[in-house]
Image (cartoon, rainbow, N blue to C red; front, side, top):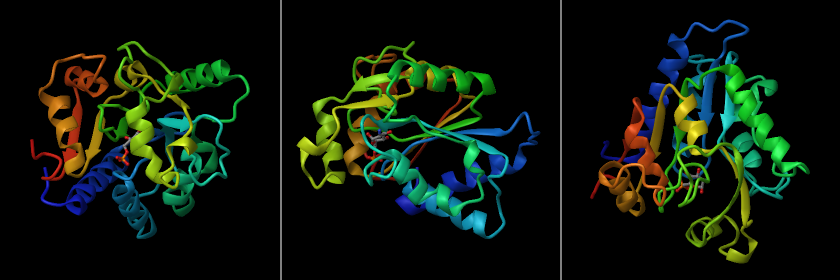
Length: 244
Ligand code: GLP
């Protein structure tokens, strides 16, 4: 817990940098990093870019897997998670383009897209570090209430509270928010990651954070509670989010 969002972001960025720098990659064994979108990780991305430009870390031997993408949005659509990731991070660091993996929201064969994504993650063996955010209703990626422990990459329907929370990116118009997304599952995150690190900021997340840590374990109605059983989960938050 940190007194400000800036300090929390600084800590997690430095944490990621040290993990990447301490890893001995080979061409067949890169550092595998899971990544989220949302406003919470933006400060972490900004600091990773700064460190990369200053030569303190390189992403040349890092492979990334993003958590989720809206269904039906083009990568060039400003609200797509593709656009977000390139705009906020990938365009500004030295990661090879072929190392970036993001679900394709325009895939015509959705089942195949999801199966291939899940298989590609498994092909790498382990995600060394999966950074995530926390939805106000306890979602991880787009694993909404009802997501089972064994869920894998799939198409999901967004619940009304998520549509409401995310409409701020769609001119505050709920009707413009896609109703479906592609998302890695709870099993994809928990069973394939050596470590999961959530960045949780702001008072609006306090109730969700309290429930994630102290609420009922393995509660499908509150998917972040599954993290209680992960052997290596780190939560980086500010005082506002830790308020409850
Ligand atoms: C979206 C994403 C989640 C993210 C959540 C919280 O719904 N699919 O992966 O964690 O938003 O976003 P924010 O950090 O903006 O509150």
